[in-house]
Length: 64
Image 1: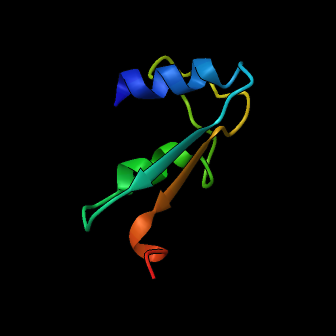
Image 2: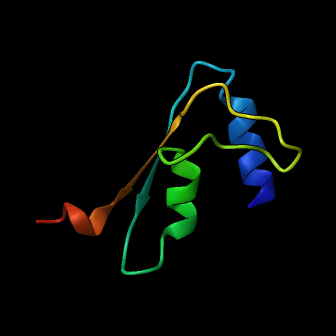
Image 3: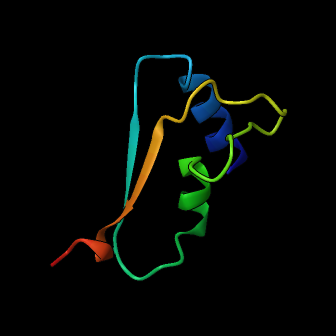
């Protein structure tokens, strides 16, 4: 998770977005954390993401 957070913070400097789709009934708390809607995402070194580039969508909420 630390490496993923670091990679997302670094990617926030680039013209890209990340969409994560949660499939199944697992606990997706970690994916929601990466989404950055609740707070600014920080890497394990404390560097803040320049912008929120991650959108998490739990498929179970939209399957019907």
